Length: 456
Ligand SMILES: Cc1ncc(COP(=O)(O)O)c(C=O)c1O
Image (cartoon, rainbow, N blue to C red; front, side, top):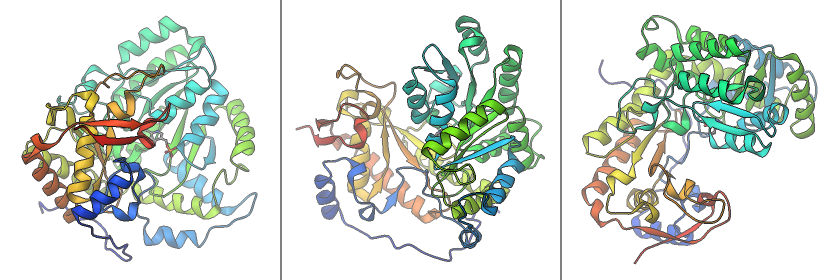
């Protein structure tokens, strides 16, 4: 069959409040044209993030009722630990309330002034947690990964030559770990190949540096390996995942992505001393090592989510439905980062709206119009997010993108068709869209709270 259906039936529904343009103009004016400041009940299709927005299955909800809330030694922890170790066989599994808590603990132990942490591309919380310790996060993604229009099967790969040269230049003693983010969120949700993971491990082994994986979207990455990398077409997703992690010495994880839950994460590793130190820090800020920052029921939901996320029918639907959105936008003449990522489509707003200068925020203008036109909420990833410099000046970001992140198991094909129709209509009258200005901003992370208005 050519039609790929959602491999689930809907048992419980959450109504969407339908709104019209006049109402949405009022809501957005009140939010000072910042989509983060909208009430979500005023959004028809919410593509702001894929993080923590998954629908849980009936089996996960049932598991929640099995949650054991004992302070120490809960059987829910043991079920969670077993589910993680089944896929990622690390010795120490340390639950945290989300991914950034795992990062905070890891870099508090191994970071510090004079240290460097290379990655394909650091996610912003990872970089922030590294830099908070005085260390420096370095992005070494391959050149192809920086060109939005270029097709390449594994644009998330790290540049192996540059990694080697970087280690030589900075010295092994200053590089406590090398990281790989799968898939590469900040680089467009692009996957890393098994060959690249293996070769990164070889380099790490040569220099005696541990390799850590930022595992948020490990299952989506494994599916890309299965369909794009030679030799994996007949290997099960579980075995691909196991091979990916066999090359690593640890991982950080936001379970809000590929563990199909609304909150959770973990830090995992083999290193005895680091793990001991991590558990001590965990107790300070998160909680006892058998629950981390979570309830027993959250651990149960993650354990079941990990079984479900590696099912091939689910991943086939997941990756194909994201590609479906990307292909239709391309057909409508809308420029996107190519090829389609696993969890999101990124519209190249700078290319779509060349009449809006980067410092007049083409991404924000497009995101605002998507909301006004059809009640769709997306996220600007461009000059608004990255343009503000530490000295208070502003410069254009490398790209002006609008990210359409797809929550897992939440929207059906007709919801996605609605998004395609809305964007096609906006594209037909794109010259009517104008630039925007910021009327108020905080000193850091301005995209979350800044106020905007139209120019003119
Ligand atoms: C690649 C990557 N790493 C880390 C994180 C941080 O995870 P959390 O939001 O659970 O703190 C995210 C979240 O989006 C991510 O995409």
